[in-house]
Image: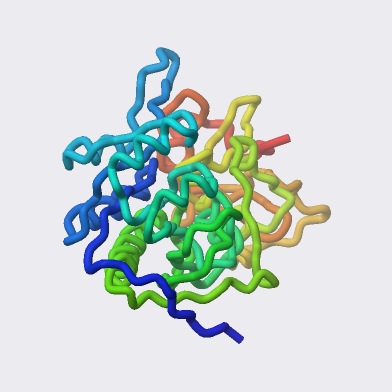
Length: 332
């Protein structure tokens, strides 16, 4: 049974001064929405600039770029120590609003905010705590996911729930498309939550720890396809690891990214093989579905591919340049 929402004792003014903490693209819609509202975003806290690529070109975080256009002061401390706390204190913020900042906040830092801190997490907490809730929902084949606004706590994603929004899933989402969708939904609910905090009417409820599940950081190697698993599992992985790190296999020693696919659990023209083709075997070409590959259960139709150091291609364009693909065994 879901516990009732608990009314907070703290009462705040009708508007709040916000320090916004965020780094990647998913946080930008929330920053835009808050900056356009009646509350004042007095500063933005984001990750330090970093070098990318072979030339180590300096890349600004999406949140920093947007804050600069909005004319909002930006803080980029390497650590949230004494100097960072001094800089935040000078901004005189009431509320800390966090969307994918990338670091935990300690008690001394949280004590700077009269109205505390809140965080937008792209899952229906307590399900999928941690850094990768969006691909986790796709990998699990969930029928729905959502966003949660929670009070910031010293333990990761364990704060009381202030608001939630449910988002149904069609089974076609990639992590990229679902991230954009949840970012927009979350921005709206986040702004509403800030408004209720400002009016002193915000309610909350504790999370049920017995229902908590956790996600870990995704590594490049996680995208490697295990062809012995069912086709529907691989198809979900293709979507979950798009755009990064991409689901991949190998073909003649080269990395082959699988960018789009479709599982065929019971193909109409399935034939009995004795023994059956080894998982990873490229069976044939279907002019409607794409390139069919045998899996541990069913077949996977490859629709879009990218061979190492080449551009992404539709399956038919790919075959125009790779003539010995049918019959090959991928991976391993």
